Image 1 (tube, rainbow, N blue to C red):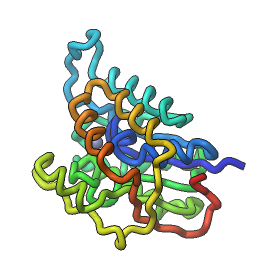
Image 2 (image 1 turned 60 degrees about the horizontal axis):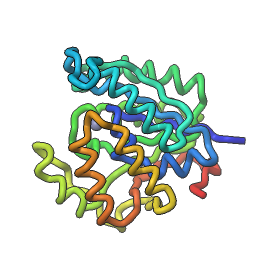
Image 3 (image 1 turned 90 degrees about the vertical axis):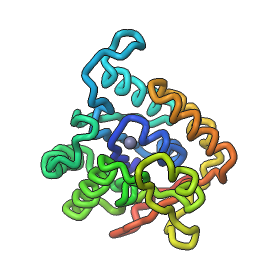
Amino acid sequence: MKKTVFCVIAHPDDEAFGPSGTLALLAKTEDVHVICVTDGASDPRFHPIGGKKLSDLRIEELRASAKALGVQHVHFLHFQDGSLNNNLYHEVAEKLTVLVKEYKPSLLITTELRGVSGHLDHVAVSMITSYVYRENRSIDAIWYNCVSESVSKLMQSYFVFFPPGFKREDVDMIVNVKRTFTKKIAAARCHKTQYKDALRVIARWLISPKEEWFLVEERRKNGISLQ
Ligand SMILES: [Zn+2]
């Protein structure tokens, strides 16, 4: 029987720029859901592209990206981009818990606790997902997506503080994403409103090992394989 996997992200594009190769591998055998906590837009104005609201465009982009990865389900919790460090922890946790009770995931995937890039929305989502994992003992494991030291060095100018990445020997799982690399690139390209980020990220992937790194916490083996 298929297991359910939840990938919990802050913004549309975090799935593509993060553990997309792994999500595409998992989606071959398991039921994968992406849960996006914000709509990816704090600006309510209409975007020049097609006269649509930026949040509507970004929702469409995430749906297209999920499709490119073979991911079957996308949920939005509809919080505002940039607002998650604003004492919303319990509200977000409650909404996420409703989905956990409904779909009974065996595995949660999110960013490592420093949000990979240090973005405060990512940090909040990682903390909240960790809390939901701790409170729901039916979930077997949580995988924290993280990056290597070499990636974090390349990204250091991107945010005010990009936390240092990990050493190979410090991570628990390295997923070879060669087989889903084309899907990973296709997913990144779906985020047309973020095309500058997408181009930069794809350029880095092309010259890097086709790997995604994770820290793993596990209550029990759940039989989820990355075949
Ligand atoms: Zn993000």
